[in-house]
Amino acid sequence: MSGAEAEAPDQVRGAPDYESLVQRVAALVEGEPDIVAKMATVACEVYWSDGRFDWTGFYRVVAPELLKIGPYQGGHGCLVIPFSRGVCGAAARTGEVQIVPDVDAFPGHIACASTTRSEIVLPVLDADGQLLGVFDIDSDRPDAFDDRDAAGLRRVLEVAFGGKDA
Image (cartoon, rainbow, N blue to C red; front, side, top):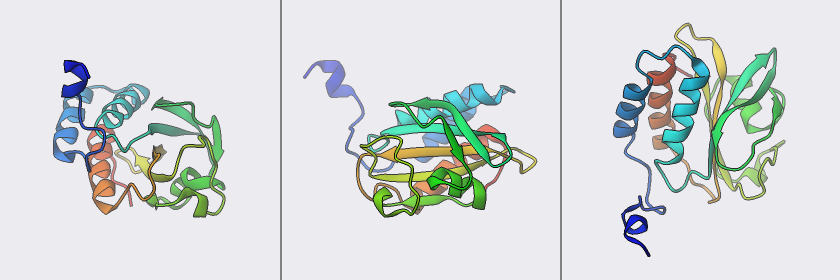
């Protein structure tokens, strides 16, 4: 193993230091008005913050009841997701965080990647409470997410986009 690899973040550790992640994202997006630029920054920072995170990305609201892929890190994602389907659709439709310990047990799960075992999806709101989209994180590990992740990720989204979710 090279020195650079030895110093890389431990890819098997627990949840990231969400307070540091919030501070880092806040500094990076400060004064940035472009939503897509903010999404790209958040997707990147969150992806590299924790080895459990196999895919991080946004699905943007582009029409009534319709999400389309936005900035992401990891393998390819689904291009279009209706609000009526999957974990992302459920988060957009209900306005509630979805924590799915086993994606195979989730009715209507959309398998964008065959390696996904668990998932967390959070609604993304602007300062006026309007739904911008959802933030989706997949893991190749079962039962990878909990309420601590939901709370920490909520804070990241709030600092980046100004909204508070359900």
